Image 1: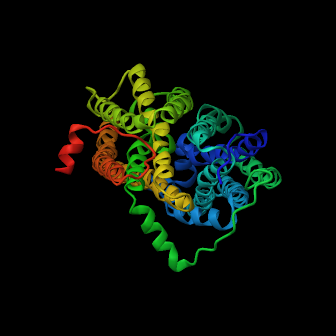
Image 2 (image 1 turned 90 degrees about the vertical axis):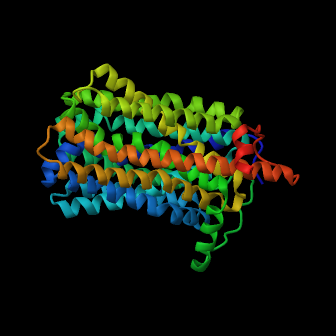
Image 3 (image 1 turned 180 degrees about the vertical axis):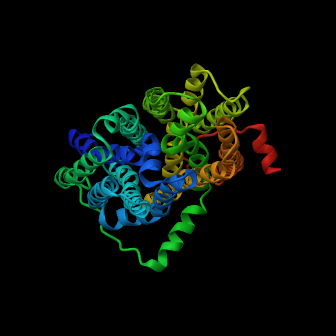
Length: 439
C-alpha cells in the first residue's frame, strides 16, 4: 500500500541512496574528459577508445531487465550495496590497468555496478514517497546525479593534470567501495512500521513472459522510445565524444572544452526539477515537452553539422550544447509513463525495459562515431567529425519517428480505455490526428 506522506526518514534514506547514483554518474562519465589520456595510456585509436564506452554502456543496457528482477528478489538496499562495491572495484582496476584488455575488463565491471543504481533508487522512491511526489523525487534524483557528471568535467580535468591517472581513479574507486557500508547501515526497504512485501522469486522461465507483458503495454513502448530519442545525444557527448570534438575539431583548450561540456550537466541540474515539477502538476504536458525538445535537438545538430567551415564560435557551441543538455531531464518522462501505465508488481521490470532505450542508442552512436573516425582518417578533423556525427543524427531521427508512432498509439489506447469506462491516469484531449489515426 503506498504511503500518504513523505517523512524525515524517507528523505534520509533517499539521500543516502542517491549518493550512490551520484557516484555512478561520475564513474560513467569520467572517460568523457579522460578520453585523450586513455588513448595515450592504452595506445588506442578512435574505434578502440569508443569500445570502452560501448562495452560499459552495452552492459548497462543488458543489465536493466536483470536489475529489475534482482531488485524485486533481493530488495534495493542489497542491490545498491553490490553496486557500490562493483563500481569501486571497477574504478580501482581502471586506475591500475596498464593494458587495453585490462582497461576493458575494468570498464565492464564498472558498467555492471552502474547498471544497478537507477532502478534501485526509483524503487526506494516508490516505496517511501506518496505517488504524487514520485515524479518530483525522480527528477530531483536525476538532477543530483548531475553533480557526479559535473565533478567529471572541470574538477576531474584539474585532478588528472595535478595528481595523475592512477591516484585520481584509485581514490575515487576506494571511496565508492567504502560507501557501501553507509548504504547497508542507513537504507531500509520500506518505511518504519510497514510490513515488507513478500518476496516472490521469479523462475527463469517466467522472466520472458514478464518482459513481454511489459513491452506489450503501449505506455512502456512509448517510454522506451522517449528514452532512446531524448537521452542519447547529451549522454554520447558527455560520456566520450564531446571533449575530443571540442578539443580536436573546434580547437578549444582543455579547460575551455571542459567548461562547455559542463553545460550538459549544469543545464540538466537546473532543468530537471523544473520539468519534474511541471509534469507532476500537468502530466498531459509530458509528451508536448518531449516533442519540443526533439525538435530543438534536430535544429541544434543542423547548426553543428551545417556551420560554414565547421568551426563554430564558442558562444554558438555553448548555446547548442545547452539546448542538447535538456534531453537528460526530458528522458525522465519515460519513467513517469512506465509508472502510470503498468501495474505496480511490474513497474521495476517495465522501468528496466524503458531504460534500455537510451543506453542502446548511446551504445550504437558511441561505437559508430569511433568506427567512422577511423574510416575517414586523413580528412581535416572538423570534416571528419561532421561525417562521424551523421550517425548520431540518424539514430536521433529514428528515435523521433518511433516516438511519434507510439505517442499516437498510446493516446489511442487511453481513449479506448475511457470508452470502456475504465479509469485512466491522465486525461487527454482529443486532437485531429487522433481522429485520423482511428479512421
